[in-house]
Image (cartoon, rainbow, N blue to C red; front, side, top):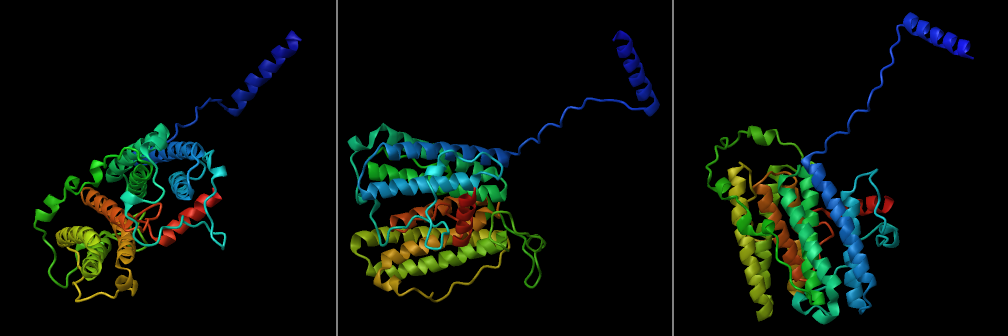
Length: 382
């Protein structure tokens, strides 16, 4: 046996020498280091998963009326979509969503939870429960939603454009959900993230800086070189997004001016403050457009309004606020800080106004309806 082993070793040595073969043990290459944007997305997906599991536990511990159950189901649906939208193919699927299917319509395509019709004063939402009934778990959920919203909105300012838009949408939705849950349950009202405060949006330098725009008839090199950014609508650029925001603000100012005389006094006071917000947004957006050499639409004498704007002005104002969200989402997806931070604050303010009129924004405010439907279909397949 020893002779056999010696002969085998000798033959192996000769074979290696004759063939010139070398055997080298190689370690597999290290995985690529994730970028800051990728880490922000992974953190957002993890937080959304944790929020979803907490929301399901809170929902299971309660036996409220239909209105309360409906709000709980809407929150679970919202967070289920956030997990699916933030998670990439191949990453582990959430373990809880199997029992929480995305709602589907008659065609089988996933749909959003139905929004309430007509204006709903949020402080007097139907089915509200007292603080004693809400329990500590609801307080924990409100706090967790707000903390996640803070992180998403902070990360959105520094992330890549496509990721930034998704993070901003998730952050806005989670903050609004926290505030709505606190109002309906009697939990402590959460503070608002600094990122959505207009005062925290440092655009003054851009507005004050004189721009050297090309003469009329010439094209701006920067504008001509613009490309559609990830996360924005097809064909959207910084120029087209700013122009769309200006046009939406012009239409909003007109719509509020038409609605004001037709609203009862208490609601008219709220609408008047919202009109002032749109006038300020229009002024800032116009200044930003000029600073970036954007050809902006001229204001019109009037804008076509749906007949409901006269019959039910409050409901039409909510629909109008919701309709303006995708333009702000495009601006987030085509800009960098500080303009992106300004757009994020404007997105939150518009979604907040829409919700105050009873027109609940989509689960990802700032995405078009078609984009939202595509996300729901993707989530349904994961």
